[in-house]
Length: 326
Ligand code: HSE
Image 1 (cartoon, rainbow, N blue to C red):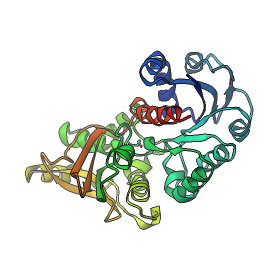
Image 2 (spheres, rainbow, N blue to C red):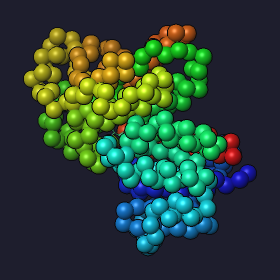
Image 3 (cartoon, rainbow, N blue to C red):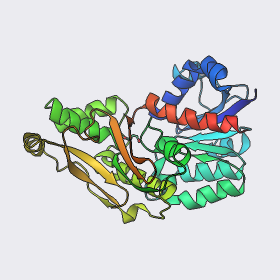
C-alpha cells in the first residue's frame, strides 16, 4: 500500500479538525480503506512546517512545533506530495489566496482536495478543465454542506438521473441561529456567538448571515451538478438579518418555521416560510438538501452542514478517492 503524501494549506478550524481526524483515524483508515495518509507540510499565515517523513500532527496541534518562514506557494510547488488540501478562507471577489494555491498545485502535478468555496464558485470550469487536461483530480465535496456527501451522491451514486433542481438549507450557522431563536428564544447575538465558538461560522460571519456562503454553495451545485455556468453575481441574495424574533413567533403561530433557503433553479437565496414537519424543517447546524431527479424522484439529504470534524469527513472521502486511484 502506497502512503498518500499531503500538503495541508490552511490550519484554522477546518485544518485543525482534519489534523485531529487524521490522528484519530490513522489505523482505521489503513485497515478499512487501505489508505495511509502522511502529511508532509502544513502552511498557515504565521508560517510553514515541512517534514517529508511526516509532520507530527499531535505536536503541531499542541503548539510544540516551530513554524518556519518558507513561502506557501514555494511549499506547494517544491515539496514532493501527491495531494494539496486547500482549506483557507476565500475572498469571494478574487478567490484568493486559494485560487493561486490550487493553480500552483495543479501546475506542479498535484491533485487537489478543497473546502474552499470561492475559487470553485469563481473558476469551476477553468480549474476542472485544467485538472482534467493534466490527468489530476480536483475534488471539493467539503465546499458544500459540511458532512453531507451531496456532490458525490448526485454525481456518482445518482449518475443515471437527470436532476432538474436542488434546493434547501446550505448554511449551518444561519440554521443554528434561526433554530436557537425559534426553539430556545435565544437572541441573535448570543446564537451567533455560540455558532462561532462551535466552529460553524466563517472567519467573516457576515458571509453566513448575509447569505453569501449559501449563494457560493448554490453556484457550486449549479455548475458542477446541473450543468449551469453561473456566477455569484447571477444569484439574488438575502440573508437573515431582517428575520426578527417577532417574524419567527408569527410564523410558528401559523404552523411554519423560517429557514434560509437556497434554490438553484431560481438562483435565489432568501428566508422562506417552511411548514413545520417539512423535510427542510431541521434544527441546529443541520443542512437539508432536496434534489429533484427524473428516475429517483425527490431525494432528501440531511446532515451536519458545518463544523471542523464534520467537514473533515468530506475531506477524508475525497482523499480516500484519490488514494484508491493512485
Ligand atoms: N460557515 C459555513 C456554515 C461552514 O455555517 O455552513 C460550512 O461551509
